[in-house]
Image 1 (cartoon, rainbow, N blue to C red):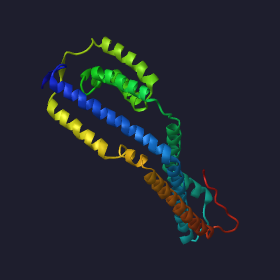
Image 2 (cartoon, helix red, strand yellow; image 1 turned 90 degrees about the vertical axis):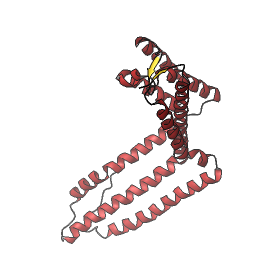
Image 3 (cartoon, rainbow, N blue to C red; image 1 turned 135 degrees about the horizontal axis):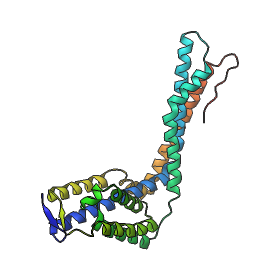
Image 4 (spheres, one colour; image 1 turned 60 degrees about the vertical axis):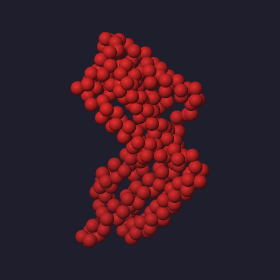
Length: 258
C-alpha cells in the first residue's frame, strides 16, 4: 500500500481527475434535466398511450380466455387482474410525471452562481472526498453528508452546498482535522480508472444529450419522432378498442382505471 502525502504530485493528479470526473457527472445530470424539460411531456404522453394499449391487450387476452371456455367475462376478476398487471406501469407513469414536474421547477442560475457552486464543491472535495479520505467512506454519517454535497452540486443548489460546507468543516474538525498522510493503494491504477470513467461519461448519454439540445434541427426531429410514436399508439389503441367491443354483450361495460 502506498502512503501518499497531500503534497505529492501523484496525489495532486488523482485529486485533479476526481474533480474533473465529478464535474462531468454534474454536467451529465444537468443535460438530463434539460432533456426532460424539452421532451418530457411528449415522452410522458407517448408512455401513457403505450400503457393504454398494453392494458387493452391484456384485457383482450383475459376476455378471450373466458370466451374459449364459453363463459361470460367475470368483470371483478378482470379488474383485479388488470390492476395487478398494470401496477408497475402506472407507477412508472407517475414517476415520469413527478420527474417532469421536478425538472420544470429547476430554474437556470447565473454563471457567477455556477462558479461559486463549483468552487465550494472543490473546496469540500479536497478535504472530504471518499475516494481520498477513508473516514468519509467508512463512517455512515460522513458518507451521508458527502452524498448530500454531491446532490446539492448536481442540482446547482448554491444555498444548500454553502450550508453543507460549514457542516463538512465541523465534521472534519470532529475527526481530528485534515490528514497529512493518506492511504491510497495503487494510485496510478486509480488515476487510470478515473480517466476511463471520464471517457465513458462524455461518450454516452446523458452527457451526449448536450449535442442534441444545442441543435435546433435535432430537437425538432426528436419531437417529431415522439409525436409519431403518440400517433401510432393512438391508432393502435383504437384498433384494440374495436376488438374489445366484440366482447361486450348483454349491456356489459368495461371500467378503465386511471
